Every structure is written in C-alpha cells, then in structure tokens.
Image (cartoon, rainbow, N blue to C red; front, side, top):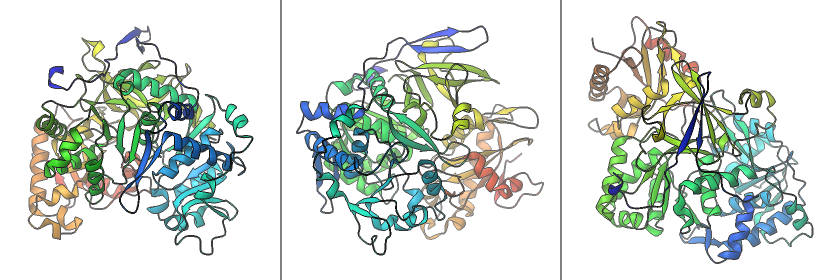
Length: 618
C-alpha cells in the first residue's frame, strides 16, 4: 500500500506493448524523452552559475574534516586542469587512466579530461592492489594505450605501474610518498595542474566537444574473462540522467545529497550516482568506507555527519547498515532525517534485510522509505528500466524509461531482453568482433538477461528479472535450469549464511551447488567460531547440520529436477580475481569458477563423494 510509505515524487512508468507475428514484443514507455544537455560538463557550468557556493563534492582529510569543493571552485579547477591537459599530448587514442579510487582530485581530473574531449578510464583498484600478476591491468593498458596515468598516492601503485607502464608514460599524482624513488616515469604533482593558467586554446577545444564525443571507457568483464572497454559517450551520460529524472522526479525538486562509496570504475557509482549529483546540482560526499565489517565504521561516521536525501548501495552494504543502525540510534536518527528514497543494485536484496530497513524507517519516521529497483548495464549508461514504488521488490525491474525500447525475444521458455536507446553504447573500444556480436539486426543491444511479466494478466505492472540467458543450461534429461532464479532462491532460503552460489549440473542428472558462504554469519552458528579457520569452521558439525537441514527443507518445496539441489559443497577459499572468477565488486563468473574448480564439480557428481559434499537426504 502506498499509504505505508512517505510521499515522494516518484513517477510510475507506463508502457505500450507491440506484439509481432514472430512472437517478439516491443515495449516502450508512453512518455517521451525530454531535452538533455549536450555535455556532462555543461551541467557543471550551469550549477557554477546558478548555485556557485553549493558543495559539489567533498571528502574527509587526514584530520577528519570534510574538504568541500563548491560548484564555482570545481569549475575553476576543472578549467585549470583542462588547460594543463591540453599540453600533455592526450587524445582518444591516448586517454587518461585513473588507477586509484574515488576522491575529489579523481573527479576533477575526469571532468577536466571530458571538458576538452579526452576520454578517461577509471580502473578497478583491485587490478593494481589485489592482483598478483597484474594481468587485467596489463590488458587494460594494451587496449587503451594511455597517454597519462593519475593516482592519488603513487606509493601503493608503484609495483603495478612498474609492471605494465613504459618508462616514458607520464604520471600525475596528488602524493608521491614512498613511490617516486628511482622511478623512471616523469611525475607531475596534482597541485601544478590545478594551478595552471587558462590556455588560450581552451575555449576553442571545449567547443568541439559534442554528444558523440567519447567521455569514458568503462571496463566490464562479462562472462568471457578479460575486461571489455565499453564506449560511454557524452550523450549517453546526459540522456540517461534525464531518463532517471523523469522517474525520480523529486531530484528536480531539491538538490540531492549523497553519501556514497560505490567505485567509479563501475557504472552504478561512476555514471549513475555521480551523474545524479552533477546533473541536479547536488552534493556528493565521498565515503571511503566499504561494505565490510572493518571498513563500515568509516561509512557510519560519515552518516553521523551527513544526512543523505538519496541512499544507494549494494545488498551487502544494506545488511551492514541495518545492523549498525540498530546499534547506533543517534546515527539512525540522522540517517532517516531527510531520506526520500533508497535503491540497490548489483545483486538481489534478501527480504529479511529489506524488512529490517522498513522496520527501522517506521521506528524513526513513522512510515517506510520507498526502495526502488530496476535493470541496467554498463552498456546502457546504466539505467534502462525502473519499477514503481508499489511494485518494487527484489527481482522486479519494472518498465522501460522514456526513450528506451525493449525488445523481448522468445528464447526457449524465456523472453530475452534487448535494449535500443540513445543511451546504448556504440560498442567496445578496439573490439569490432565483440561489438558486432552484441547487437541484433535492428540495432538492439543484447543484454543477455531474461525478463518475465510480473503478472501476464496485467502486463502494465511491468517485469521481473528471469536470469542470465547465457548461464542457463540443460540437465541430461533435457530439462532447462534457470541459474539466476535458482541462485536467488538458494540465497534467500539459506539467508543469512550464504553470500553467493555457483550452480552446476550441465548434462548431469541433477543440480548441485558450490556455495560461497557468508563466513561472518556462519561463525555465529558455531561455539567459539571466531577462533576457527575458515576451513575448520565450514567442517564444524553444527554448521554442517544446519546446512543439511536447510538443504532437505528446500527440496520439499522444489517443483521438479530444475529447482531441486541434490548436492552442495561449501567453498573454503576465496575466489580469484586473477583467474576471472570474481570481479572487484563481487560479481561471480559462473563459467570460470566451474572451469577452474573442475575437481569440485567432479566430487559433487562422484558415485562416492568426499565428506565435504552435503547430499540430499532421501
């Protein structure tokens, strides 16, 4: 019931459905796409005029205070840095690469590059700081052939730079502490760039930037392993924000305030969230916390200081948020004080976490705060579909945004979703074959996702996610297994003890699962579990009894062989970024895990499985 929620100006999207004789359907939003800016930096210039003293971006300094940059200051700094960049020999063929995480300086560098039509790429910090062979980072450099590297602090990135960059590739760094000793690469301090005099050529160069100009290269790994460089144009970024505003109409009513950690090398953080702040004259407070037990204290302190009007996170972040807000009522009071909307992405949100967030909102505000869901991809800038407040639930993706056409193509017993819009990428950089494979003959981008109607009798209600088409497989009986839906069911049924699941069973008689456990929650099942290694914990009798009981109970509600998990194995080691098993944001590459861990799959299907395998009781 909408009466259960605080009133917020969020529009319900309506759609028309065109039925084709070949079984395909074309779904379009009934609202047209409104006018949008030509360049992302046009909005920086606009707000520098309209609200020069409003905070645009802020981060905590070493003393714990917020270093705030207003819109007026940001534009001045961006123009100065852009003038410096004009003399660095950069181009589309030699773009700017940012190796370090979110920061004031990172954002200023990115906007400065866009200001003069030089693409920039924010690269996952994991490729430099977690990877041991720097394979993905080397691939990124091979694809982009960068002309300049930016880092906040050179020290931690020194090994990665030495491994992949030529000696003559220049760097710009905010700090060179512990990193410039015996370094061959020329290094410029960031202060030099932001204090540069305005180049006489700046205005002329800026005037050549248009909607077709490449703004960014964003890397996405997909299911094949090595990252692909998605071309993001200025038009894609600007049009997508107008699409979002047409649904989240409250963004135009008052400037949004975000406290956000989501990394800018991902489309949710770098396009969606930064864009919401910039396009609407909002304030982005950079959260250097992360959704982990140790790092979430940083997030909590930030939320103690700054009350967001819009909060966006991944499911693991909401799980920690609920826990910590319960423990800190004074922070919970601040957090909910002006919150209008929440949203999650990257994975499904467990219902018990959603319910707990609603309970907290009611406790502190008297009503629920709306949570919305949707569907998008790096290749769609990202937002393509959104659900209404009343329909939003984990797995619901809603209807297309204005300007978006969704083609539904029958694929087995599913409807494969394809998207056509001005917000769809023109392709992958220097990868013509991958680009050609990603579009159909009508120019629709093939998402690889399936959707289904929430209610076929009421198609206007919109759609729910129906799994990744590329992940689904058949048992040797010919029965299709919908991997995405089964994974979501297992995670929900075993909550909160399961973080993620890899489904096995291709050409086998039954379905099995390799479980990535939520170790922190699993420890609470075992007496003195905090003293055990992960391997010892996952073999503890009471934990195994709990998983066995849940496995047996889940089987009772299965509807057939495609939804019945007959064997399960708990993985006791971390998935590998270097082996393409997992991305830095935690998304699992199912194919890579099954390939790299073939011995576990063999154990699951052995006539005499090891003691590590849980077998469904008969």
